[in-house]
Length: 618
Image (cartoon, rainbow, N blue to C red; front, side, top):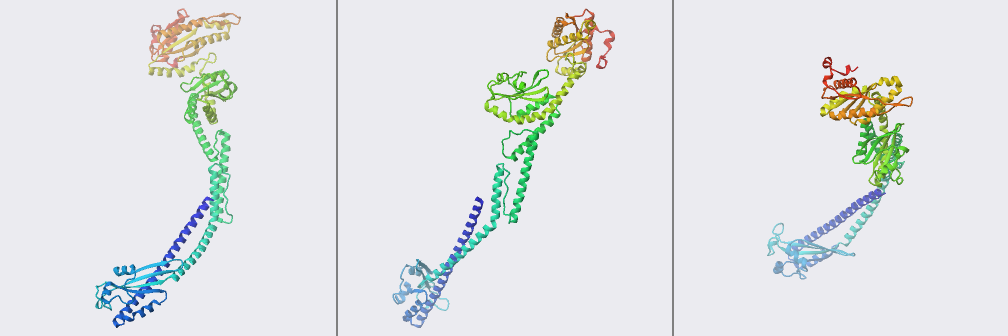
């Protein structure tokens, strides 16, 4: 309605201004024409007076001029008429009839200036126009004024003053103007009515569109445009807009329903379906890019790094940890952590045990494990597979921050859901890889993994200027264990040795079950003294370890160890493995239960010439 009122006001103002301008022009024109007509009448009368006076002068009848002047004065609308003489004429001929000297300042001014003067005097009841015309001397033309008057060329000889009654003319002009105003008002009303009638459908359409678009701006797309059915153009426009709104509303609804089948968007508090759809599409695009990226990642570690990147750069979170838990073997490993974040994951974690999110604002001291790390926190479990759980731990600054992170959890879950198939796949690949490269009895790497690891690891060590010590270990008289007690007891002895090896080496060291009762250990960047210390520690600890026999008795076994140093003994890792095996053989031959360092003297002449390679291990 504001627009309609504004347009009506503009139309009225425009027409009113045009009307006032027209009336002003008409009034000015009437006034100008009336004045012009009166001035022309005055000029003609003045010329008659001058010609008459000149004729009286030439005929010598100047004394009879009063009758002539009275006759002219009696003309219609002429109230008064008088003539005056200039000082030069008065000096030459006297003051004249009825004292023909200037009556007022106007006569005096016209005599001095020689220019015509007129003045309008009026009130409500009358209007009079005073006109004073100069009589200027001239020696040119049909009459030579200078022949009778002692005057100069152009000098004013006198004036003719007349007072005209213009009341009737003025009244007629006013009446005419009033007629014009009345007709103009009627025309203006008709024009306004015609404008209103013709523009009303468009104005109603515009107001309806304005209302509908205002609602749409606030996110309500249910309103529709209403137009006059009888007006074809506006009705067509309304139908087009309504059809577009129908398509838009249906499309947004379908997109929202489809998106909710795959992703969680309940956290979105925006009431505008169009903006919600935009957010949904943007979120789906981000998730799609994330999913396509992790499909080509090599392992779970890289996927965890991608999840951390999303949490940091997409959600703006910087205090969190990620852990994976294997519920089958009751182990939990931290796989990602932001700097300076104190928190230790345990299998007793309430979130992991209940498979429900744990928030610090749920209940005081709801989780002792998390409470010890921070006063404000969130711990959220995600089930990846039957025995594979993912834990996200967030440290919040305050309760408001806890609420903020809570609001982000549905979006975070969308990314975790999209990563779930890749985590399952890569976890299965890792399990298969471990099973193919790990000895099932001891849990140590097998001979196959040694083939993959040896050359790669030693080339990296060479570039880093590091070394490896190669230990070859074998249980003394192991065949007697199998023959006496059976293979089950032999397996116990092998398991015992593998436990000793695991507890004796560092994280950077790698142990392999080389075959049967024989083991191989690669110690990273050790001095020869340290290598000898670790090897003897393994030998002594194993010799003290009891093995349970079927009859309830226990026994112990000893261990022989041979070792070589890479690259001191050889820059070929497989040659060093062969040297460690030679040293082991030397330990066996020289009494067993000892550690022997390889030396070149242990090789025969034929062995010195032989070049050991992986193809010759068998």
